[in-house]
Length: 302
Ligand SMILES: [Fe+2]
Image (cartoon, rainbow, N blue to C red; front, side, top):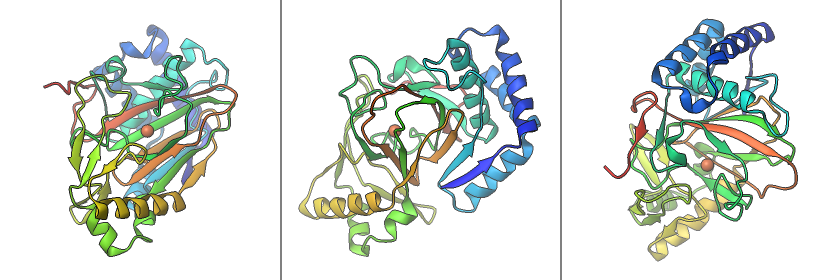
């Protein structure tokens, strides 16, 4: 996994500005598009070298990038995380994602349209296979059942605390495809798979029949949730089994430290985790897109 560090003086400068910006806000739900533009400006001014480095790494082929000790709030690492720390961390997550050129957006049907999602076990959802559960959550792309323009291009995760030492696993698509026979790739590119709407969506997200692999501008992209995708033919079933084997072999694991920021290309990388054990675990997540409007709440019923 590619890693980047922010020089401590630049990090402190950005954190201070973000903290000052948040002084007038009680919670992340109050951040609108105009606030996100301002927050992005803080990172563009404070850490231009980091923005350039992230861009260069992605342009150079990285599919997943860890920014170690990104920070966001000195209160990160406390368990449970304070509301203040969550608000500041949310501002940092939205601002940094937007500074990279990926506009944060959300769905009306998911988590009440919130731009920042709490990724932690929630009462009542613990046995669901989702970011609110504790069960094993095998490799997947987020929102795999949605059309390409609706799916997030970038997933940004910021760790507030992880006492459970539950690693997030990622598998970059080129590493998966390297070990797949050409005939399996061809089969995975055919529309013979049922993609089911995830548990985190209420209502309007529909199951969809499509491919798993798509050739876009000469490069392969992936969309699948391996725990729920249903192959519809015998050949599709066989190719899917090979795909899952190769994806699992290509996994790299990241053990979280408070303040880590993980950027995942949701079109060319799968992610997942094993079951969550004892101890508090709380990440924040936001979706980023280059085509959606900054701060948009997309209504899937339209
Ligand atoms: Fe996910």
